Image (tube, rainbow, N blue to C red; front, side):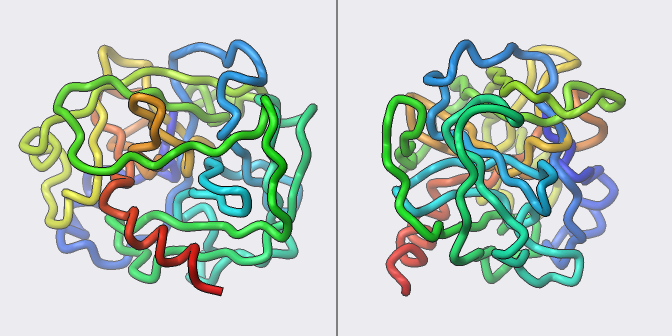
Length: 257
């Protein structure tokens, strides 16, 4: 479900083998999978709206902090999106009903973006969220991740290359690739900052609109949706920013005023 998630194809990855600047491509949809069962299943999931149009996913990691992909919160000239046009929808698996939209006070893409292996960012909210059954933070995963474990991905992205955005949140399960297989697919340095996910078959994965959304293992967030190789839902890997690598940056940024 994440067509890079603004579409990054293998060619673009090869051209940027040393992770030079890359123009952001939007993440696409969750392909395959199923709809969220109720509003309590993914209480950490948020949807980002820019000028009232749905753009990306994200996750609540603290009362005033949202984790997402950098390409979701920067403009094509590289500047952060204005806090005047961005809203964060929390508390509902639907895009058009339930929950509420909250205003950000700061938008912080990683300083090393647009290098593709630094496609991660934070949004600070004007007011602290009040946790309830539909609004909860998710803990960040720390340390090494076992090989071949299953993670849960979620998002509102397109359900196919020619399909619309999903008004209802969808989720799917994918498997974490081992490091060698990940490197062979990406063929680039800096790949340890990226988590590669493999699919059981075609028509699974992320697509446009899924960018910024979480990958979760054992109830903790291990990834942030970044890109797909090829078209949405293909058998090729989906790429996620590897959260454990970025925990120090996340924590330090959240301390800064």
